[in-house]
Image (cartoon, rainbow, N blue to C red; front, side, top):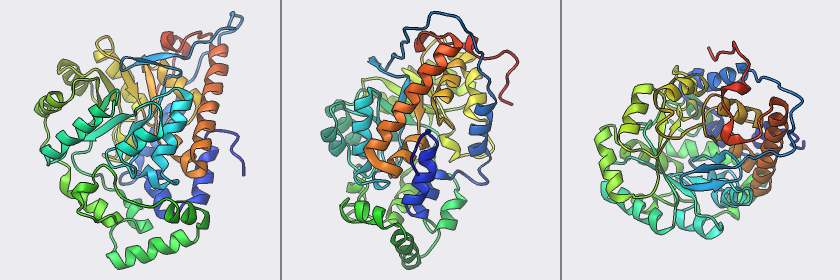
Length: 385
């Protein structure tokens, strides 16, 4: 099978990587209601065709976090992406750099910040969770600053890990160490190309940024235990003061879904907000981001830039989100599927597809500039209910 459309990479990823990894990437919290809503609500939004305009010049550039980028798209943070393909975060960072879009490195990446910085000409954005060990957090912030990271993406919707039943069914979680290792080893044996590329050639396997906290342990069980033990359910808005003490560059707050929370983030000096429900992986049965975004635009859209993620799979989806009021869109699973399917080349191909889809659709809706897109490109009467 060859990928001819962005969503083809999902099927290719499913064929290539072990089940426990695919389900970790593909799954959501609880019964995955919000996971499905992210897609179905976005698909309901109808574009308004507008013809016979001079559309020879299309401008997709956008300014985010003090820098101009070629597309209103970023590769959002994905935990453990480095084991979807060999040294995966490095490959994705190179693809993003080639396409002229931001790449955001997760706190819980397989490749360390230093390794990713060395692999790409453009320093990544760095994503951070609030952790109990504030000294370690301060050290990570210092590393990100010294590495030249252009923005800090502070995730606020994960004070505790969500309940993801698919991980229990696949053998990623909930088994004894012996049974878990046996289950995952068998699943990996069924994916020999992945096992050779990642399991053998891709070593060492660690959680690069948090490896110092794991005292030499590197198993997935150690990762899960670290998550349970180090995320901080006591975090409050006051903790943003700690972040600001250690970070003077653009601060982007990720995980806002409610207008009141958006107002608080704006009042506390966030440089941008990412409207996000963590890809449906945290609290199930909440709003899709397509439905939440217009309310947040109404609350704070004139005060700071709004970015969004959740269910975005194509250039048409990016255009829909821009029409709802976002200034740029983060890809999540979309780029991770491509990475798992074919590494850097596939991620580059995905971004080329998205750019082509956007250019084609912008001609047909009469939008000459990504920066000027508004609700006028959407058909009246649509609703993401």
